[in-house]
Length: 530
Ligand code: ABC
Ligand code: CA
Image 1 (cartoon, rainbow, N blue to C red):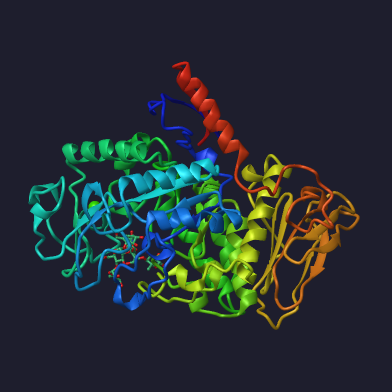
Image 2 (cartoon, helix red, strand yellow; image 1 turned 90 degrees about the horizontal axis):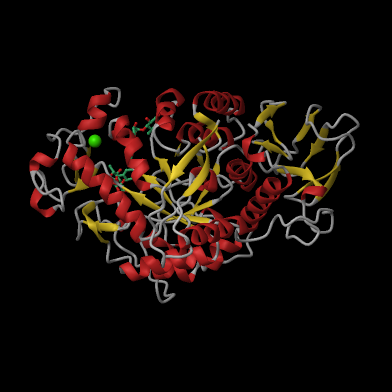
């Protein structure tokens, strides 16, 4: 599983600290996904923002900088922002390009979000906190505001010959159509780039390399990956030179698995669907979730380890648009933090946002007041801290596949030592109990549910029996895994490690090491988990 990759570093000496993070450097991270236009304004104002209008509401990169404490206080050490390049201007009839996915010019920035200096300032502000920046990029298409498009409005691909012939995708079972026909519609056609043409391919490879270097990004989320032939991607990823995570919007693990061979990682859409249905109501199917995840663990390149695990994003109705039962919400939200992949939280979930399908799920966060002392904010904080503690306590936490134990129609136990997650979809009027004889703890180990700070003891065989009130989930770890002076249940904790702290020391060490080697003109050999 471990191979060596040689990385020749070409980063400029002055752009320090340099992260240019690889896949394994992202694995212990936790990502906060935000819609730049909707997250924070430069001057802290709170303009009204009617999502149904689909207009720019005023969020900027400076706004993000001003709210990094809010993000970091929840325990996130990476952010994923909206695409940064220049988009079509004006109201298209489907609104403005506030989301950033309607590229017009790949070599200019979206001025609604700020200047190049602002974006660089965001990267620096993140890096000085030990946090990573993930950019979002669209390579598959350019957006037009008329049909047929005015090709001369695009840059640099400004002739019809640069694009596949116009045909809107109608049959998602026909992969050639998926790759060469167009997304969008006649109001906003998403003109499909001719990625079978070498010049276009090479322009894109050079472009991604420059983009990552110019803004010292640490990772990249790639849009519409299934809409370009698979063999386009390995060289694209190599030119990016940082962690790549692809959006392959499909629920079928067999369809998604091959894409894990051409990029570092994929967003875990196959899990997203059964995860949502499992916890959205007491009649949800927990074993369907277990089956799907077991399948993905067996068929993805790195099992589920590198996948981006999420419950919400900009394309799907928010979880709380389907249920307001806070027990169900808390159970579902726990999942991304206790399973094998990299947790991603979509901004606003922590504030209890309830927006339905696009565009309702893109609410302005300033309307929440960024209140930190709220149940779901605290829930996220604890989950992030518990995951960090688990990583620090067990050096193989990140490489041990989650095991499912004792699944019943309303309860589920997921073991990923030192964590035992006890989840339920019984809802807030249920009193769930779990009996997990094979939990695998040392005999009589003192444990704690970090979500309620309740002490539990493993039995003589290392098993766990527990029950919760109000349908709450439990996240059980040894008291020795928690730091006495940390933020998680300090009165029960007996550990003294450095876990649970904010920021990331390891990232800084990498940065410093790279800087030192650059200074003496050496290249760097990075161990990669592939
Ligand atoms: C606009 C309007 C929407 C309107 C839509 C038609 O047009 O705002 O109200 O409904 C951007 C904007 C959007 C905008 C679109 C189109 O552009 O953000 O607001 O919608 O102009 C990515 C991004 C997304 C972005 C784009 C475009 C792509 O995440 O934010 O959208 O750059 C397809 C693509 C996927 C894409 C998604 C929007 O469309 O594959 O990359 N997302 C099936 C297909 C999928 C398809 C999906 C939705 O439908 O297989 O390929 O995604 O159309 C599962 C199945 C799946 C199935 C799902 C629905 O169910 O397994 O296969 O997905 O069970
Ligand atoms: Ca395409």
